[in-house]
Image 1 (cartoon, rainbow, N blue to C red):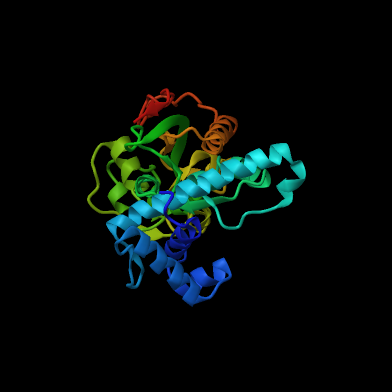
Image 2: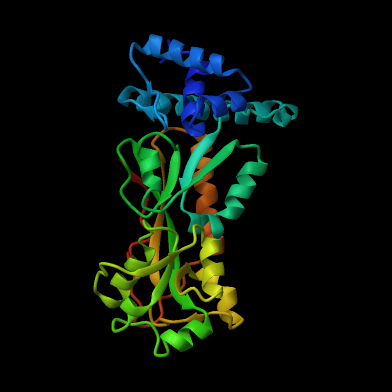
Length: 324
């Protein structure tokens, strides 16, 4: 990897993050021509095409590997910056806008337990960048090198990565009291879930179907759904009477206590185990992020006992770290 220009490698990473030569040039404070020159130089050194100039830009197989190298360099820069801050505290005022430490996380975690950890890490000077995606997709960002680590609900890490159990994120089924009175007076159950309207993030959001499958048994082929693309957006939509929301219990707790929401399936809680997975490397930065997330989950969501009759999606939520 030493023969590849680090500046050109960073240009490749920025190009794919920004999606166009124009935006990459603005972020790097150079001209579009300079971006093209850096990419051509890197492709010449690699002896192959790295980016397909399409809309959107796409990486070739070699480009995917090269982007991973670029992220490895970012991690090394972040490690170096930590060492410099210890040796020369005044140098901690300098900010490296080039190298960002990218991690992936689901929106529900961002909106509930993870924010304090991310706030503290950012204040410490870590150039953190968080990609928010569905829980089923965050692991893909780790696998293809777009993220150095991710929060996922899959226990086994990808090859070359390690996994640490965080705890569980509990989901409950809630609705506005008026919606419940009109449509679900007896509560949500196996006999009427197909008549209810659900609020989801998007068409790929599997949480409503997962809840129904774990609570009532059948795997619904289709649900009547409305979409609100964030945890906070789903909460607002449910409060507005759009339908039933399968929300993190910690997010729905206050509206439930105030009577603004009703639990339409009080005997059912879906516990989703969460794991921090990252490259299996000796890295103080990755270890620091992992430790911060573990502590944030412990403080925000201590594991409560399941109500009688509730089902657990995965009872083994305190598993030890797993290595590939």
